[in-house]
Length: 242
Image 1 (tube, rainbow, N blue to C red):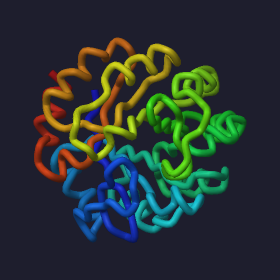
Image 2 (image 1 turned 60 degrees about the vertical axis):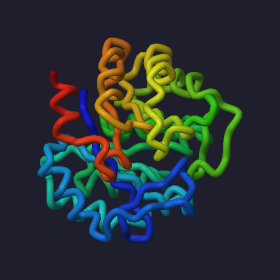
Image 3 (image 1 turned 120 degrees about the vertical axis):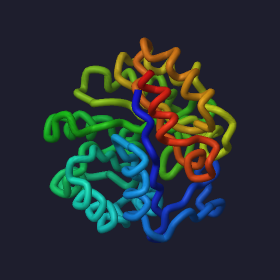
Image 4 (image 1 turned 180 degrees about the horizontal axis):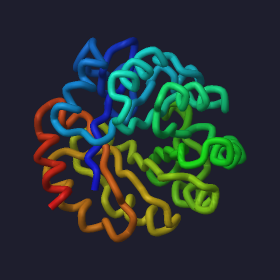
Protein backbone atom coordinates (compact mmCIF):
# COMPACT_ATOMS: atom_id res chain seq x y z
CA UNK A 1 0.00 0.00 0.00
CA UNK A 2 1.28 3.43 -0.95
CA UNK A 3 1.38 6.37 1.45
CA UNK A 4 1.08 9.44 -0.77
CA UNK A 5 1.98 12.94 0.46
CA UNK A 6 -0.39 15.71 -0.61
CA UNK A 7 0.80 19.08 -1.85
CA UNK A 8 -2.21 21.38 -2.03
CA UNK A 9 -1.53 24.56 -3.98
CA UNK A 10 -3.25 27.85 -3.19
CA UNK A 11 -1.97 31.26 -4.29
CA UNK A 12 1.43 29.74 -5.06
CA UNK A 13 1.84 28.26 -1.59
CA UNK A 14 1.57 24.79 -0.06
CA UNK A 15 -1.47 24.76 2.23
CA UNK A 16 -3.97 22.50 3.93
CA UNK A 17 -7.67 23.25 4.17
CA UNK A 18 -10.26 22.03 6.66
CA UNK A 19 -13.20 20.30 4.97
CA UNK A 20 -12.33 22.04 1.72
CA UNK A 21 -13.01 25.57 2.95
CA UNK A 22 -10.72 27.93 1.01
CA UNK A 23 -10.93 30.56 3.75
CA UNK A 24 -9.87 28.02 6.40
CA UNK A 25 -6.33 27.34 5.22
CA UNK A 26 -3.01 26.78 6.94
CA UNK A 27 0.12 27.71 4.98
CA UNK A 28 2.90 25.17 5.45
CA UNK A 29 5.36 26.39 2.84
CA UNK A 30 5.78 29.11 0.23
CA UNK A 31 8.05 26.77 -1.76
CA UNK A 32 5.97 23.86 -3.15
CA UNK A 33 8.90 22.51 -5.20
CA UNK A 34 11.03 22.47 -2.06
CA UNK A 35 8.21 20.69 -0.22
CA UNK A 36 8.10 18.06 -2.96
CA UNK A 37 11.83 17.55 -2.46
CA UNK A 38 11.29 17.14 1.27
CA UNK A 39 8.77 14.34 0.79
CA UNK A 40 10.95 12.64 -1.82
CA UNK A 41 13.80 12.67 0.69
CA UNK A 42 11.43 11.10 3.24
CA UNK A 43 10.80 8.22 0.83
CA UNK A 44 7.69 9.26 -1.09
CA UNK A 45 7.00 6.94 -4.04
CA UNK A 46 4.21 9.09 -5.46
CA UNK A 47 3.00 12.67 -4.98
CA UNK A 48 -0.58 13.92 -4.92
CA UNK A 49 -0.86 17.51 -6.16
CA UNK A 50 -4.04 19.59 -5.99
CA UNK A 51 -4.57 22.93 -7.71
CA UNK A 52 -7.07 24.39 -5.25
CA UNK A 53 -7.48 27.67 -7.10
CA UNK A 54 -7.89 25.66 -10.29
CA UNK A 55 -10.70 23.60 -8.78
CA UNK A 56 -12.75 26.76 -8.28
CA UNK A 57 -11.65 28.46 -11.50
CA UNK A 58 -12.32 25.39 -13.64
CA UNK A 59 -8.90 25.62 -15.26
CA UNK A 60 -5.28 25.16 -14.10
CA UNK A 61 -3.82 28.03 -12.10
CA UNK A 62 -0.63 26.38 -10.83
CA UNK A 63 0.55 24.66 -14.00
CA UNK A 64 4.03 26.19 -13.73
CA UNK A 65 4.58 24.71 -10.26
CA UNK A 66 3.32 21.30 -11.34
CA UNK A 67 5.63 21.35 -14.36
CA UNK A 68 8.56 22.38 -12.16
CA UNK A 69 8.01 19.46 -9.78
CA UNK A 70 7.60 16.99 -12.65
CA UNK A 71 10.76 18.31 -14.31
CA UNK A 72 12.79 18.02 -11.11
CA UNK A 73 11.63 14.43 -10.48
CA UNK A 74 10.99 12.90 -13.92
CA UNK A 75 10.97 9.34 -12.56
CA UNK A 76 8.56 10.04 -9.69
CA UNK A 77 4.90 9.19 -10.30
CA UNK A 78 2.76 12.31 -9.85
CA UNK A 79 -1.02 12.66 -9.85
CA UNK A 80 -2.67 16.06 -10.20
CA UNK A 81 -6.24 17.21 -9.63
CA UNK A 82 -8.08 20.51 -9.57
CA UNK A 83 -9.62 22.30 -12.54
CA UNK A 84 -9.16 19.53 -15.09
CA UNK A 85 -12.15 20.10 -17.37
CA UNK A 86 -10.74 19.68 -20.90
CA UNK A 87 -8.74 17.23 -22.99
CA UNK A 88 -6.28 20.04 -23.75
CA UNK A 89 -5.53 20.41 -20.04
CA UNK A 90 -4.92 16.68 -19.74
CA UNK A 91 -2.61 16.80 -22.76
CA UNK A 92 -0.61 19.65 -21.22
CA UNK A 93 -0.12 17.76 -17.96
CA UNK A 94 0.80 14.52 -19.73
CA UNK A 95 3.29 16.45 -21.87
CA UNK A 96 4.76 17.87 -18.65
CA UNK A 97 5.45 14.37 -17.37
CA UNK A 98 2.55 13.93 -14.96
CA UNK A 99 1.60 10.26 -14.54
CA UNK A 100 -2.12 10.65 -13.86
CA UNK A 101 -4.69 13.41 -13.96
CA UNK A 102 -7.63 13.33 -11.56
CA UNK A 103 -11.04 14.23 -12.96
CA UNK A 104 -13.55 15.27 -10.30
CA UNK A 105 -16.30 17.79 -11.07
CA UNK A 106 -16.37 16.95 -14.77
CA UNK A 107 -16.85 13.25 -13.96
CA UNK A 108 -20.15 14.10 -12.26
CA UNK A 109 -21.41 16.65 -14.76
CA UNK A 110 -20.18 14.96 -17.95
CA UNK A 111 -19.37 11.25 -17.46
CA UNK A 112 -18.75 10.85 -21.20
CA UNK A 113 -15.73 13.15 -20.79
CA UNK A 114 -14.08 10.53 -18.56
CA UNK A 115 -14.73 7.81 -21.13
CA UNK A 116 -13.29 9.98 -23.92
CA UNK A 117 -10.27 10.89 -21.77
CA UNK A 118 -9.54 7.23 -20.99
CA UNK A 119 -9.59 6.43 -24.72
CA UNK A 120 -7.27 9.31 -25.62
CA UNK A 121 -4.99 8.94 -22.59
CA UNK A 122 -4.96 5.25 -21.60
CA UNK A 123 -3.72 4.49 -18.07
CA UNK A 124 -3.53 8.22 -17.29
CA UNK A 125 -6.97 8.91 -15.81
CA UNK A 126 -8.03 8.77 -12.16
CA UNK A 127 -11.52 9.78 -11.05
CA UNK A 128 -11.70 11.83 -7.87
CA UNK A 129 -14.86 11.24 -5.86
CA UNK A 130 -15.33 13.65 -2.98
CA UNK A 131 -18.30 12.75 -0.84
CA UNK A 132 -20.33 14.50 1.83
CA UNK A 133 -22.57 12.08 3.71
CA UNK A 134 -22.29 9.74 0.74
CA UNK A 135 -23.25 12.34 -1.89
CA UNK A 136 -20.70 13.58 -4.44
CA UNK A 137 -19.53 17.19 -4.06
CA UNK A 138 -18.28 19.27 -7.01
CA UNK A 139 -16.71 22.62 -7.91
CA UNK A 140 -14.08 22.62 -5.19
CA UNK A 141 -16.66 21.04 -2.84
CA UNK A 142 -18.79 24.17 -3.07
CA UNK A 143 -21.75 22.21 -4.46
CA UNK A 144 -23.26 18.86 -3.42
CA UNK A 145 -24.83 16.82 -6.22
CA UNK A 146 -27.68 14.32 -6.20
CA UNK A 147 -25.27 11.54 -7.19
CA UNK A 148 -24.26 8.82 -4.76
CA UNK A 149 -20.52 8.18 -4.51
CA UNK A 150 -20.84 4.43 -5.07
CA UNK A 151 -23.13 4.92 -8.08
CA UNK A 152 -20.65 7.31 -9.69
CA UNK A 153 -17.78 4.89 -9.14
CA UNK A 154 -19.77 2.04 -10.73
CA UNK A 155 -20.29 4.15 -13.87
CA UNK A 156 -16.57 4.06 -14.59
CA UNK A 157 -15.88 0.42 -13.74
CA UNK A 158 -15.42 -0.49 -17.41
CA UNK A 159 -14.21 2.87 -18.74
CA UNK A 160 -10.48 2.29 -18.39
CA UNK A 161 -10.03 4.41 -15.25
CA UNK A 162 -6.75 3.63 -13.46
CA UNK A 163 -8.08 4.26 -9.94
CA UNK A 164 -10.52 6.19 -7.78
CA UNK A 165 -9.40 8.73 -5.19
CA UNK A 166 -12.13 8.73 -2.56
CA UNK A 167 -12.29 11.62 -0.12
CA UNK A 168 -14.65 11.86 2.84
CA UNK A 169 -15.05 15.63 3.07
CA UNK A 170 -16.19 15.52 6.69
CA UNK A 171 -12.82 13.98 7.62
CA UNK A 172 -10.56 16.02 5.35
CA UNK A 173 -8.03 18.11 7.25
CA UNK A 174 -9.80 17.39 10.54
CA UNK A 175 -7.35 14.77 11.92
CA UNK A 176 -10.25 12.51 12.94
CA UNK A 177 -9.22 9.26 11.29
CA UNK A 178 -9.92 7.91 7.83
CA UNK A 179 -13.38 6.54 6.95
CA UNK A 180 -12.26 2.97 6.33
CA UNK A 181 -15.73 1.32 6.02
CA UNK A 182 -16.96 3.79 3.37
CA UNK A 183 -13.70 3.57 1.43
CA UNK A 184 -13.75 -0.24 1.41
CA UNK A 185 -17.45 -0.30 0.45
CA UNK A 186 -16.76 1.96 -2.53
CA UNK A 187 -13.87 -0.26 -3.66
CA UNK A 188 -16.02 -3.36 -3.44
CA UNK A 189 -18.88 -1.69 -5.30
CA UNK A 190 -16.85 -0.57 -8.32
CA UNK A 191 -14.06 -3.15 -8.47
CA UNK A 192 -11.47 -0.46 -9.20
CA UNK A 193 -8.34 0.30 -7.18
CA UNK A 194 -9.20 2.96 -4.60
CA UNK A 195 -6.92 5.48 -2.87
CA UNK A 196 -8.21 6.70 0.48
CA UNK A 197 -8.15 10.39 1.30
CA UNK A 198 -9.35 12.53 4.16
CA UNK A 199 -8.63 12.09 7.85
CA UNK A 200 -5.42 10.04 7.80
CA UNK A 201 -3.96 11.01 11.18
CA UNK A 202 -1.53 8.44 12.58
CA UNK A 203 -0.18 4.90 12.24
CA UNK A 204 -3.45 3.46 13.55
CA UNK A 205 -5.12 4.66 10.34
CA UNK A 206 -2.51 2.86 8.25
CA UNK A 207 -3.06 -0.32 10.25
CA UNK A 208 -6.83 -0.08 9.73
CA UNK A 209 -6.45 0.58 6.00
CA UNK A 210 -4.26 -2.50 5.64
CA UNK A 211 -7.24 -4.62 6.73
CA UNK A 212 -9.10 -3.62 3.54
CA UNK A 213 -6.28 -4.19 1.04
CA UNK A 214 -8.15 -7.19 -0.31
CA UNK A 215 -11.16 -4.97 -0.98
CA UNK A 216 -9.06 -2.96 -3.43
CA UNK A 217 -7.78 -0.08 -1.28
CA UNK A 218 -4.26 0.40 -2.64
CA UNK A 219 -3.08 3.61 -0.99
CA UNK A 220 -3.73 6.56 1.27
CA UNK A 221 -3.17 10.25 0.71
CA UNK A 222 -1.98 12.17 3.74
CA UNK A 223 -1.64 15.90 4.20
CA UNK A 224 -2.08 17.68 7.50
CA UNK A 225 -0.84 14.68 9.52
CA UNK A 226 2.61 14.63 7.90
CA UNK A 227 2.85 18.43 7.97
CA UNK A 228 1.96 18.68 11.65
CA UNK A 229 3.94 15.61 12.66
CA UNK A 230 1.28 13.19 13.93
CA UNK A 231 2.38 10.83 11.14
CA UNK A 232 5.94 10.18 9.98
CA UNK A 233 5.93 9.43 6.25
CA UNK A 234 8.85 7.00 6.34
CA UNK A 235 7.37 5.09 9.31
CA UNK A 236 3.95 5.00 7.67
CA UNK A 237 5.33 3.60 4.41
CA UNK A 238 7.38 1.03 6.34
CA UNK A 239 4.23 -0.11 8.17
CA UNK A 240 2.29 -0.20 4.90
CA UNK A 241 5.01 -2.42 3.37
CA UNK A 242 5.22 -4.79 6.34
